Image (cartoon, rainbow, N blue to C red):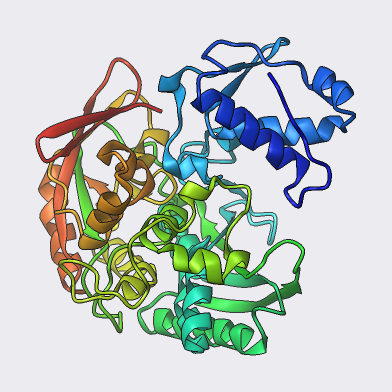
Length: 471
């Protein structure tokens, strides 16, 4: 492997290594199975710090170009081990590397629950339990930043506040949270690019959304937060939240009841719910790294270089055909309205189901990280069959057409039409559908559960194809 490194170049040394190795693999100079020089050998021969080589190899590994061998360094990966566009941008759809660590930790009082649940350390009540959850709006805030820079309207960040809250709240719904919820927000910003009016809009949007939720019976309150100026960490803004609640142990939906013989009712992510002010495209807050780059044009890369990671291969950066103001095909929305559509919460619906039919819900799954494959992380020995999904919403069709992402990968990254699943007895499905309808949310039986002798498996039907997934 030959490297010609220019220490006077503006391109960092590790990036020069990444680019040159990537090129040698593309041209066949390095072939699948070829062993790369050791990290130590490369560092010594080029008089570099070992950390520089490690950083370069990690980037190449994440792109799926090389793979580690136990105690024997790295080799060039086989072509069929290449990764999807989502992971090539530094994002993991299934977060397998995180779960490999977390799965070894204490899983709490209810190991199969959607969220970790602990004893009631806050009040010491033996009949209660605590749950604390952290999440955020992800890279959707960068799209809001682009819109803000283009229009000068900070109000676009109202939706980002909602995104951050919902990603916590709707995960908590999956364990049956029904009491008071206390929320805290963290805003990490580059103050040069995101001045005070952006922070004001985020706080205003958060308070307004929390008030709307309370009007629909969700007891959620603000506990303050933190705004950190971290220009060295982000070129734009990152919005995260943390939610905590105290519950009665007897009210927990543990996930143990997701067994064969159930109906899977999907709650649509599109349309306009009775508690929403605008039509929802269904985009949610997962997969926005791909949506942003695959949909938006190179115009944004050239004008706003602070909005993307320079380590990403340039052919994956803002490589789409659209500007924010362009019309989304087969939709009444613009592209910007579609991909900035605030993440829908299903809290009013779930609260109503719990109130009207306390024993109906056998399980709830928020199709967030991992999207339609999220179900594989729960129960054991279940064959999840999803063969009656909603029609693919226009925003996901446009993303797929712009990126040529395989449909099988699309279902691992995006919710594709429904973002909350209710698992219930087949005879109870109509009750769920009717209650969702009271809030103008479409619902349908999207599938069922059967027994599996080979562990959890998902069979998902898309048009004339059936995709199979395993944990």
